[in-house]
Length: 287
Image 1 (cartoon, rainbow, N blue to C red):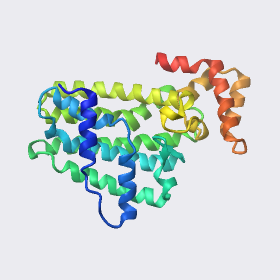
Image 2: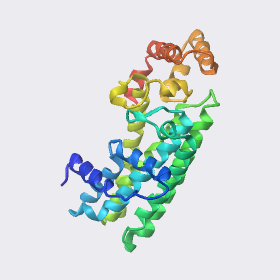
Image 3: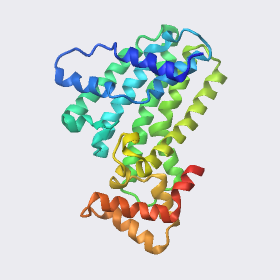
Image 4: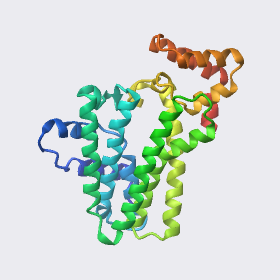
């Protein structure tokens, strides 16, 4: 069995072999950039890990693993534009380094590249893998739309939020394990168990990401702290703070959400004060 570190190294090596020396360079340089600035390589490593539960030769699952990593990074390009994010993995986001139009188009190219990689899956698995991938790709878009819808609502429930992050984040982690299982020849029952485990892992991953966005170290987190607060994202922390605050703090939170004339640092600090008073960080960890 390969260790996670070994699988991550395999992915890094294989990603470096993807040929992006193409014209126009303005289209492909951002693709090479986003793939080269690191990341946990969680999703492709999970493909290989699930495959390795049933087979030893993980090289046979490289193409779908790379496809999922390229697709994931494509979603980040578009997500960063929508979130107006300046940093990704402690580096400038693509739309900041180049432009929003470049980030949109390079992201589109990455989505096509993901399918190009996926097309190398052996014929006996291709239909099932494609169907799983396509369903997941649409679900990620659905989750992103819900996330944007919630920005204009003040009555989002915890259950609605969990469903949103299931679609936006969890399903891509879950399908990584599922595809690895399919390629490894796992039974339908085992494939479903891998998928269900991935869903729960993805929920925990996103909840932790929400926590780090408010309480993390920018050098470790790789993004500016407080981005969700500035974007008025309906995270678990904000939803629970609105539910648990007294009338004074509820009014203050609602006022902070609506205000655009306050300095970013002040808004973040004042929201965090209410989070601390309501102890929502501890509630998130218990979730």
